[in-house]
Amino acid sequence: MSSVPRKKAVLAQAMAATRLTSAAELAHRLVTPRAHVRAVNYHGTPERFAASFDRQLAYYRERFDPVTAEDLDRLLSGGSWERSRPGLIISFDDGLRSNFEVARPALEKHGFVGWFFVPAGLVSGYTVVTAEAARAASIVPDDAYDDGRQTMSWDELRELARRHVVGCHTRTHRHMRASLPEDVVRSEVVVAKTMLEQQLARSVDVFCWVGGEEWAYSASAARAIASSGYRFSFMTNSAVITRKTSRLQLQRTNIEADWPLDVVRFQLSGAMDLLYLPKRLRVNRLTAQ
Image (cartoon, rainbow, N blue to C red; front, side, top):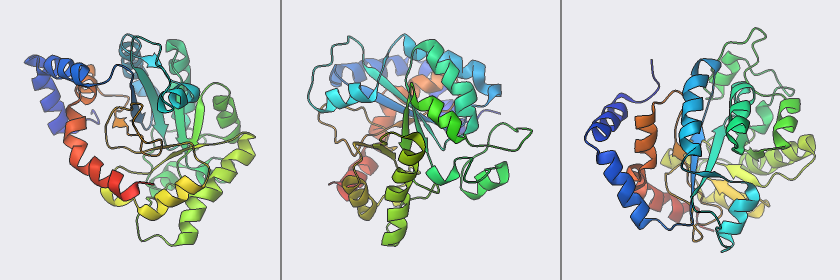
């Protein structure tokens, strides 16, 4: 069974059949600055979805260029975007083992840079994160492995960091709600960053909030992120990234590895950006630094 919400699947199919998706894509191109980047986020990429994920990557490669951290930095610094096509950041939340075993080689096959956002305290090595432990941390486990391990190891993360971007996704995969005590916020934002940097022997300057719910954002966490040396911070409220976008309010659009291309097109057509606009404005006001 597909993980696409039923209403979204029906809407995407209807829009594709009536060519409304094509119309939305055209309107989106007309109103969007040529120099822009779209960021998408995935979770698990299990082997059973490998063929679907490969089709998605082939679709992206025809329409987007890969984006490194340096590319994003140049765009947000007002620098020129020398490419004729927009950029695409493909990110993965939760540090799942399938991201290393399935997503990484597929990304490299198609020439993309992956952005992997990892809960530092749940990297296998501190603890063996089994399917049961993953569910306890609000992480959806994917493939069943003989040894039970669900998350990446430090060695796998070090290998990823050679060609891809590794960022912080808190320490324990915690939603950064307003009620969190200051010491907990510090642990999830600052201590997690230090843990990753010590193990990877490199700077980790990308943060990604956990969850897209409005209550999962807070001014206190935004202040901690801004003061902790993070260069970029990602959210999940669907909008393109342009020169005018705040470095600490970079939005992503959710896609999963098993979704068919008509749903992927719908997600990227600009329709979700409009749908998320009221919430995005509220969250941006709350977290502005």
